[in-house]
Length: 211
Picture: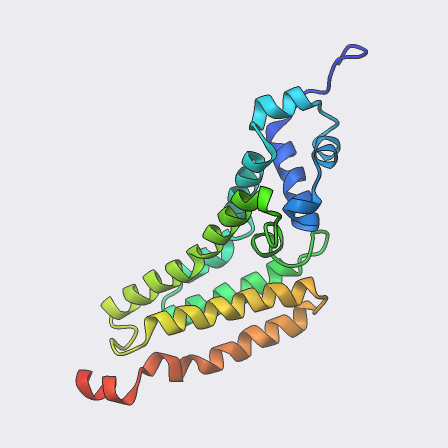
């Protein structure tokens, strides 16, 4: 039992989770150090700086935690599904559900957290942008694997497919932030897969070359 007047002890995992919710809800710029200290159990600045170094470093830890928890199911579906089409469909569906999870901020931390930062917070914004750019890279790698496995035509425009479904996924996140419900977003995710045949076939000229 803590002695009277003793500073609250930092529980690092709980502190990161609480900070994640705050950054997710308010964004990097809107989250003050005072709010973080309170949300993380009423800790004092020395404990905060000893544990995390700075607000920016904490934000980096938080975004990595978000990617490894909330972002993981969709990425696992992308990698583990029998076909790349099923994988992308699972990625969209699971994220639509994640973006509208009850009891959590709506949308995606990686879209709302580091958007439109002041110049003094440019490093946080750049970090968030770099993390968002991992998605089209991951999609491209999965699509190239599908070509190698014979699951996708070699003439398919992989950069276009990756860009298309990245745009759809981040559009789902923005829709959730703007109040669109889960049912609507799931329908959008399903309809987005209607574009798959045309995207996967590649151009007529490329099909002629590879045919």
